[in-house]
Image 1 (cartoon, helix red, strand yellow):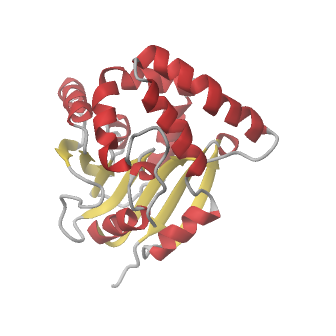
Image 2: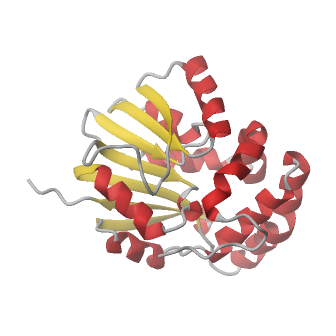
Image 3: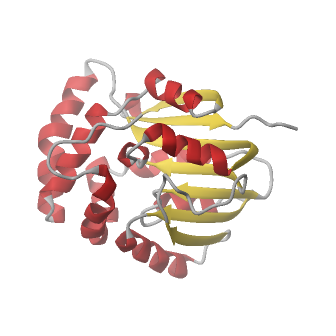
Length: 242
């Protein structure tokens, strides 16, 4: 599935350059624009990580590492690699890694979600938080996650979705009119936050996204709605061939 391009001149093949521009303010803006709820959502992601010991996790579209460092706190996680196309985001993530000295071994690497710099069946879990909608070909990206998973491994995807009525009308008003203005004012980059609302509104969610995961080869696909449906966690397992 090739994801439709949003209007406004930012193609998905170059979206990483937008994140380079907003990297210095990215963490603060996430907290402000989500009222801090994004931290609760990221903690919900780590609860989906399998409980078996020696988990090796690839955090895709890792950005500055907020999800990665949450994963590092899990006792069963021994290694996390954060992968992102934005050098600006990765530089900030590396600074945070050195300052935090996480319990699990952690590192960052520049890489494309469509061509992950990982061997076949080399990780036990993958995560991607608010990044799958930026992938040019969603099913191809999901297949890459499936490729790098060991049999029995799990992919966990956190992404924005649309709540049900009557909340949907209020949410869309915020997404279309308030969030872009606040984002532009605080980041100095109006196009970045217009891109955000356009991609959220047009991206498949719920059952439609679960179908894409099944198309990519995942089994036991589930969707967990968060905050009345403003975000959703999708999980899919790779069949254990043993």
